[in-house]
Image 1: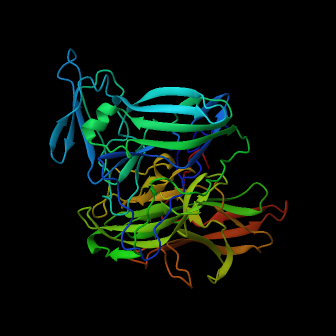
Image 2: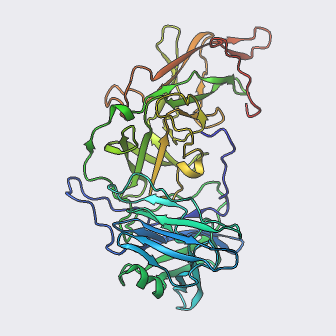
Amino acid sequence: MQLRSLLAVGLAATVTAAGLAAAAPTAGADEPAPLPDSALALTAPDKVIAYAFRGRVYSDLGLRLVAGHAPVEIWSNRASYEDPITSVWRSEGGDVPLPANSMKDFGGLKKFTHLTITDVATGEVVKARYVPGCLNGDSQRIHPDAPARSPYPWSCPWNPYTTGSVMGIQEGWSNSVFPEWTRFRLPLGRYDVTAAISPEYVEVFGISEEDASATTRLVVKRESFEGRPARPAAGGATLEPALRPTRSARGVMAVDGAPDLRSLPAFGIQLNRRGTAIRFAATVWNGGSGPLVVDGFRTADGDHMDAYQYFFDGDGEQTGYQQVGEFHFHEANHQHWHFEDFARYRLLNEDMTLAVRSTKASFCLANTDAVDYTVPNADWKPENTDLSSACGDAGALSLREVLSNGSGDTYLQYRAGQAFRIGNLPDGDYYVSVEANPDDDTDGRNLVEGDYTNNDSVRKITLGTNKRTGERWVEAEQVGIIEERLPNFF
């Protein structure tokens, strides 16, 4: 869990997509479903459910642009503040000029997509508008053999004095048609939503008729104040966008790019107000020479993702992958996707036998802390530094969770599961054990790493009772010369 405030917007105005589950290929299939032959293709799920808040719907409607067998990269420049913006598509066959005045500003291609929203009950067109084409933004890898990374920026420039920009979609990746939290004023009801790429861009990019438009059913429901989004519904998407690899494993992990998961001593150890549980914070970090990269691909039933760990060498080149478990959508006080069995928390007796096990069993992997940036190949500027970039929402088709080498992932004690229920546990000495990539007696370890001997850390604590008041207390043994001066959130 992150050290900064991570509760994002999305209470009564939470957007929930349905029908986004992707049909994964059957086991043993030789090849995944092909990417579109067009340079760009519009896709949409069969159905989207969105919740109205004060008459407004906040949703991207599930509409996405997919790049086919090559990246779509657009360079735009303004020679001076007196000149219009000119843009070219840097295609495999050479630079292709875009129509004059394609960009009024650097926010995207003008009138790139036309959107029509039709009321199913009346057949009336209730909304019709053009949407600019910013190809940067909510980028998701949708094909297992696509490049491992997208080089393109997170968003399009907004400053009026910008003089040049690059935007694009990586081969085998997709990007939302709309900016985040686009809103529409729509009554409750059912609608057919059709998006179509404008003819001038269809011609420039050579987009087929089939790939130039997409339609989805939008159901607008009343806002919910239950404090959590509805679970994503099952159902097939029109493009099958979250394809898992066709094999359980391929290639090998390079020695010079292997992650090495380690645990720091538990900290912030204290009792809850009732004295019935020991609360603690814990950090698992990557001390290897390469990143831990785990991609999730939505499955046909829609309630989980197959998880694959991807391997990289010291130069950042992908060398293979292996299926390593599952992601599940974690509601509770997280409301995003968690990887199963990334770490295990145990309270051990003085003789190192199990006293209590924490109920926490799943984690969102994110780079929250710089632990040791002197390790080989340390990533000094990692991505996935908070939940907005790491863990996905209920409508995610696929996601990537990363623990870069040199960085750690900290879960603070106020999160569900960061505690041991002590009940009638007798007073005495115990040890808080934090184990990364735990070794299950039946299935072994989920993740592949270079060294399994340094995954566990233990910290001695003493549990006692005040003889006068009867209140329980806990004291953690000091670790070396470290003095814990905890910040305000403890």
